[in-house]
Image (tube, rainbow, N blue to C red):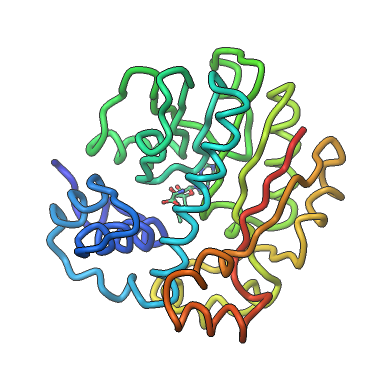
Length: 259
Ligand SMILES: C[S@@+](CC[C@H](N)C(=O)[O-])C[C@H]1O[C@@H](n2cnc3c(N)ncnc32)[C@H](O)[C@@H]1O
């Protein structure tokens, strides 16, 4: 693997480091062999990107996204699936049902680095493209339903950028689900207090109290569900349970939108 530490954006290192360290645990709740391979190849200490709360949050969201995707794919087994802002994530192998078509989309420089690690697979293709410009969507095959996954991406966008992205998705695909990670207004103001993001140069963008705030930006969308990561985190550890109690509205949420 021809990959160097500087190839990986700091914010993408957080989920990678966490998935790799969880995979190495004896009772791993999620397994991501690719993340482990990447982190082992880099051979650097990434423990500052793997503090307790972020660790539990990434494990929880990985489980929640996987389960939500599987639910949607039961309804639409041959959906067109897009992991928008995919980074190094490998959801395709968690949910592939032999029928869906999958695109891993990210900015051109990120796709270039991803290609050092992954190869295109049967029905799983890497594509350069931006969440803020729909040009790339014109090359995709048409399916009755499109399922777009945005995990750890919209948190870094301004309100205007979120609007551009939502409008672009509804303009580009006639019917779709969007699985989106949302964060609170508190986090928007406190990037420097986030246990992992404080170790990067990144700052959070527009935070919301409810996914309903997205509907003001794109009236073609409706909100199907919105679930705090606390719901999954509290099942696993006492500290996770305590956090869910004490910081009820602070954790990120998985929101599912439909249009
Ligand atoms: C924190 S990483 C998350 C990666 C992955 N979704 C995960 O959860 O492991 C954020 C990703 O969003 C991508 N990104 C940022 N702006 C983007 C844009 N305008 N369009 C598409 N991807 C973007 C970055 O390149 C990066 O890969």
